[in-house]
Length: 282
Image (cartoon, rainbow, N blue to C red; front, side):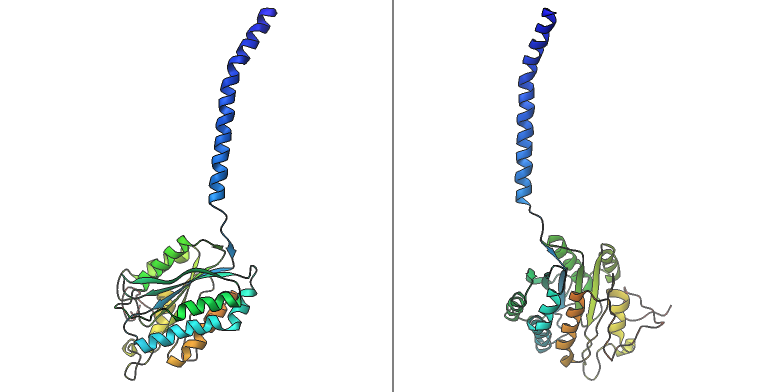
């Protein structure tokens, strides 16, 4: 019995350093994990992540671009917008303003900004108002959507709803086809809403040969998609301010809607080939 007990004691004494090393390693691993978690805090929860993707192609004059920009500035300065934000479950949204034109031109004018009060919204509007207005060549809606999707990946907030609010005064005419990009984004849970701009050009909006309300119908069939997606068409410069504010209010409030201005009519039976400009009978 004495010998047996002695062997047991000897065995325990040899195991003690090994156990100490294991305990030390466990402590270091735990400390490392604690530091890692502290370095990556949970992202703030907001009601909505919204990318405003705004067309600055040269088919719009600088004066028209200014009216468009002022429409967004006015919307964020309006008390109704702050009220809509405050009515959400968390009372905050994250918004970014992206300008786009051809496939190689996407510019983040204002990065992700958390807006949770009237003062926050006004600061966003004031920052946007002083940014220079520009015009670039090409209309790559697909490029704009890809860039907007990248912005969501870099967001430092988390939201149940993600929306791309894309405006444009023409169909996708450069870069990748738009429909597959739209489908990829909507498949990941992103909603794409449209603000097609059909301003008169010498007595027409430039797309009359493709049929009445062509651009609105193009956006309906080829651009927008996802839960509760909708569009609001603009065919007069004076409609910008009201249309932009109305659209933002609907998006922020999360109201399912498919609003149309008086000039808009449903697509009916007309079919589109989204890889081309113009309609294709099918």
